[in-house]
Length: 434
Image (cartoon, rainbow, N blue to C red; front, side, top):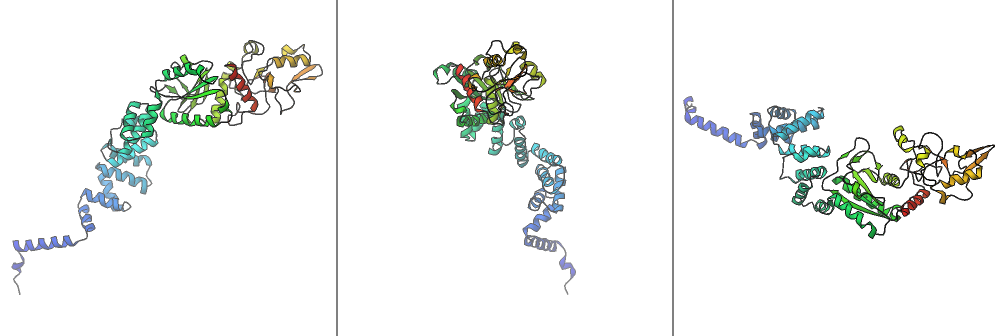
């Protein structure tokens, strides 16, 4: 039997270490990874978690690393909370946001993507992450476009080979005052009675404006009007617009070029559509039907729904202010008839007077009655609802207000059709400006 001392000493230790090394070398690689991870190797802990994120023990490792603010672990744990746990989205996103702030590129692209989805343009544009990443730069380009930083947008579009964006900026970016002024001077040289210039106040609104113009050019009535429709462009300096309720933008940069035959449409984000002294403010989401409604306002058509009190005080003025001249009422589709003027009239005399103040007089049939004799009293109104006549209007409070048709129209609910009569009246109004 051998002496036990022959298995001790430096030689024996070397043999033992060699044997251990051979044994470890012979282990499967994933076992080695696990051993290193178990002993605290961060890279291996992260690798194992990525391979099996549903494994609770691996998740504990990542959670611990995240608590120690290891950037990649913060991102992975945030994703884990979103995908495998019922934690609040806010908690998960806070881990990802922290990872991004500490420099994790995966977290940074997720944050940029989230800001883009939330249209957080200012934060997106000001971020200093991932300038060598095309996806990040494309988000930054959108931010520059939305904020009106067009010089920077051109540079980004060029770097990204975004030819469509670059072409759009080069073609449509203008000093808006000059663009509108040039167009106004050119009206007399064109085959149109009225020019309508469209302004897209921001990049998205410019796209919406172009789409709206295409629909106008395909519309059977609008496209046949003696109107020149024109995209003025994208202001190099965007208008300052408010969309809290009714959409409004700076007027002073437009007013100098407005005239009876040169109208301006400003499309911008948010707010309610409205018309204000030669300028139509239209949200970029507006459908063609809403544009039609507002376009008719340009030419003296008023709303046919009941006006709110503050508007009624302005628009429903006493008849002696509305009708400054006989036959020249303020509205194309609404008249006020003062019954006191008819007190001593016969039915025939009353009908003649009423016809004299109707904007739609040329469209009346000779057989259409506007007044009925009831005993000693006169009753105003047309009995046949299928013809052009005078029918009570809901626009203004009180009696005496009449419109030319009995049915609801697009001037009451913009989604409804516009009667053929109204298109005829519109054409007549435009022809007056020639």
